Length: 495
Ligand code: ADP
Ligand code: MG
Ligand code: ZN
Image 1: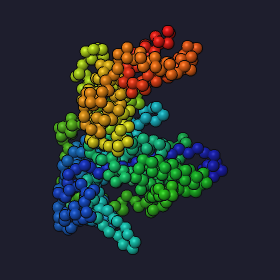
Image 2 (image 1 turned 90 degrees about the vertical axis):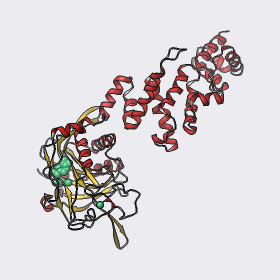
Image 3 (image 1 turned 30 degrees about the vertical axis):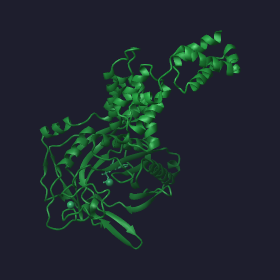
Image 4 (image 1 turned 180 degrees about the vertical axis):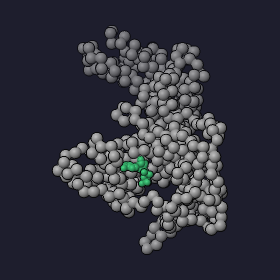
């Protein structure tokens, strides 16, 4: 293509992601060292096997294989009858053995998919493979020296490789958010990108719209948040399109994202795959994956985010936005559902016959609970209110014992003190005032003090009534029954 033509061509962005996820196992991939090294002093989780001593023999961590197959099944991938480990050879100071045990042409799974919602439309991103390997040690660089910490060496690492089906930085972000959500639902990964438990390398190229061959790609590394992934890919797409328009060839290379500068910089030109001299790991047996074993693992799959979302929409009549927030994390979804079940077991209020709606539970969870967790920097485990505790609180609202506006501070106090709703309401005398005679007195006072609002209401301004209701509420410290206040005020204003 000639340059003057290229200048006016529209380009399409093509992205494929390679995601590395540390598996939440007790021990490392091929030895008995603890894989939980986050709080450990350097080089305390190390033995001759993960330290790369000659003459030692690795043994496969069975749970890591199971977790990988479980993830693959959750991603709709196929599990072959036969898989094996291969040696990937390259010299680097963080690679204790001089090779990494990984998988090459017989991975644990092939051909999966994951769906994202782009502009309201469901889009399927192909997954090429999910395989298992081991993490490398960590280098710590100081002025004029480098140190090596072997605690991370040999930690089980799952790699999830997508097809080049992603078409924008935003789609890449959505893919990662969804993948992370699934991994957390499965309990196989912490999802912590800042700590490097979940890492993403992005392959990106551009091509004129309508072309089907892939362009030359670069591989972008060093992004440790969703935000960084999005910014890095936006930057890299623009850089490549600019080069393509100018007719300058794009080099196949690895580039690093420099967050502080908001750009990618060249790190090294890409080595060829055969530089790794892959060959089957002679010290490990091949894996024969029987259908029976695969089905046993499939049976252990929890309900996944999409299925849970659909079910919440169906069973609890929630808005899409509510259902999305409530299923974004599995433990939050469980908490919400436990609260709904608790309200159901309380049955309809004997006085009003009113049953607490799942919608009311959803409002409290996505409103009050989220707000408090954020304000107090609390995780769900640290929240003192139990699902049954919230159910009891909402039941008091349903029975007319307290108003919704009182329920909110009571909920907050339940979270601080761990006390129950009835205890707090009784101790503070917060019971809702539905006594019409008492409310009438207060209403008369309010009417006497707000002649302007009264005149406005009489002149037909409905909003003035709202104001007056608010004043009565205030005078009763939020304890007045809003329904009764409304009726009483309307009556007194007629007079
Ligand atoms: P490599 O051997 O360089 O790792 P692979 O073909 O194994 O490359 O692909 C690695 C990742 O890069 C996959 O996620 C794949 O979808 C993606 N990919 C491959 N070619 C391209 C390309 N031209 N543009 C964008 N992504 C690509
Ligand atoms: Mg690669
Ligand atoms: Zn070890």
